[in-house]
Amino acid sequence: MPTTSSAPGKVYLFGEHAVVYGEPAVPCAIERRASVTVRERDDDRLRVSADDLTLDGFTVEYSVDGESPDVDVPTPLIEAAMGYVDAAMESARAAAGRPRAGFDVEIESDIPLGAGLGSSAAVVVAGIDAAARELGCELSPADVAERAYEVEYEVQDGEASRADTFCSAMGGAVRVEGDACETLDAPDLPFVVGYDGASHDTGELVAGVRALKDEYDFAQDTVAAIGDLVRQGEDALADGDVEELGRLMDFNHGLLSALGVSARSLDEMVWAAREADALGAKLTGAGGGGCIVALDEGDATEMALSLTPACVETFRASLAHEGVRAE
Ligand code: PMV
Image 1 (cartoon, rainbow, N blue to C red):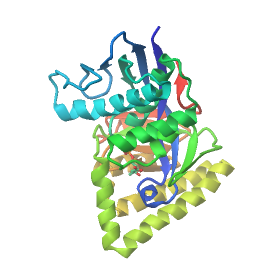
Image 2: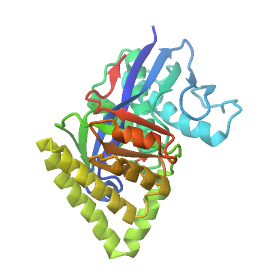
Image 3: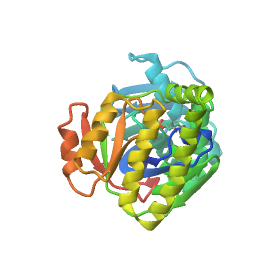
Image 4: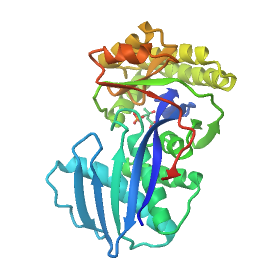
């Protein structure tokens, strides 16, 4: 019997970029999930198929000893995707004490890739959970979060915060400040996401903010102001004050824009949401292109975004209270 686990993507309510410099951030898991099905093989090979990853579907097969996969798609794409899956399977083998276990892995995801919604973290979290359970080893969500962070850290050459993996494994709203991660009590938040169809290079955008911060004291002040805003936002979240959360999201977008990480497409979507009387709207994740998140109890924002040329997809995404789970 194969084993399937799923894990949610996330939006940043507040705090992306500033979190890289030790300020707190509050990501929230959303009901858009990646699902990973793992079946143990009777040899030591790893076979991965992923038909729904927005990018071209692909199937590759190779052994644990690492011969190159023989496939007809651009190598960097395969390497990027395989890096995460490979390291996730390795982590599950280590957890179960079965270093030579081989797997057939099938990935399905309805989280756009590289768009600020935590797609790779969700695949890694669900993959570790499913592969470990397939080998008879039950991990707690906190264990999965820790292992998934180690995987992202390794695959991303040390450029990973704990935000995505912790949020995906635990679900709900979480607070991340350096290595300190905790789950927060949060009301159901009426998220609406707008997606411009683009993917971004998180490393490049982080480097851009770092350069601004090194050059200008006021850029450093902007990062600190985001930290202040997040602390204020935590109170609003605890009070269930959705209107205040919206105002702070608007402010957060302005500060991110000042740091140079917005884009015309993101600004167009943010303004479409605001003109539709969303409670607030901001880019989510690294920026440059990808997704915005707005708060709106009604249908007006989704409708306005669907009519915005810059927006290729819009959807409502409720808070995912459950993180990683067996399917
Ligand atoms: O767009 P994403 O999901 O890669 O999010 C990046 C968030 C940053 O704060 C910009 C970087 C990080 O590692 O926290």
